[in-house]
Length: 360
Image 1 (cartoon, rainbow, N blue to C red):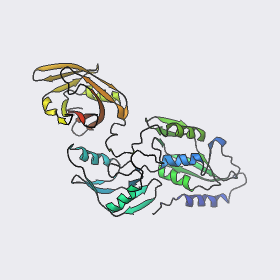
Image 2 (cartoon, rainbow, N blue to C red):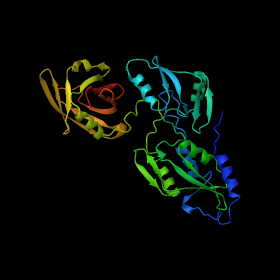
Image 3 (cartoon, rainbow, N blue to C red):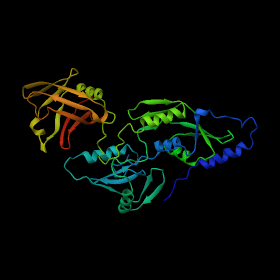
Image 4 (cartoon, helix red, strand yellow):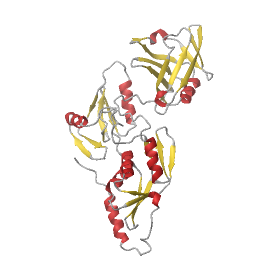
């Protein structure tokens, strides 16, 4: 296995050389007691766990939580060749997989590829059999793993390295998880680390928290490190509404008129054809009006929850196929042609999708 070697040793060596020319005044710098971190301490390990490579981020390509596939790669998805150059391209891959509900999805990866493990070590993989062998060593879905995905550091972060004589060996600035992970991994046992506080972290709900010392950082990781679903499963589209809110859904549905049912399935039966020509108009007072061939029906709709747990309840007289509580699955907005789709699910099989082709 090939391990990525950090550049930090070279930088530290350079700073060590520079320290030999300092005066006595230069080496009497005391790091603040509340802002020092020892190598191999529990908190140092926690910081590394936050900065580990998240192997579940590309499970839409291949189901393995302990490594990612280095980009770019080329794959053929349901017969369509796609070059994936960054993580945003996973959305294009998912769109191809979601195009039809009743087909057998296939993702064929072009080899060789390079996989990157949680500690950022790399290895080249030349075949699907080799890839499967490495995947077999990963934990299964939703099992405990070392990486902490429920909070992230806000970069840049600067740190100073002190030796046991309180001498500053180096001051470095980190701009990403990899750099900080390697820095913590490579510091000497006799060194002390001082971060330039305050720093900030982002927790699972998107809020940013200011951290003023290592004690606060330790508490924050304890408080928020397990405060979310890390999505270490193979259901690639179950997190499409991570950032959805009820107000967002309400704004979209009420801003556009003339919604129609594009898909409706109940108990393994497709029912959307029964609602051809039915138009739904949602109002801000949580009423909904349905019109079709000179007829009108009035009812209500309500939303609650947040993120991937938003529910919507419909109560429209005569619309028993719709009148129940649904889970919001996805809000899909195609900016190119003003097309918006809002999809709901209930259980494993039932689904409802409203579509609007003229929504600004």
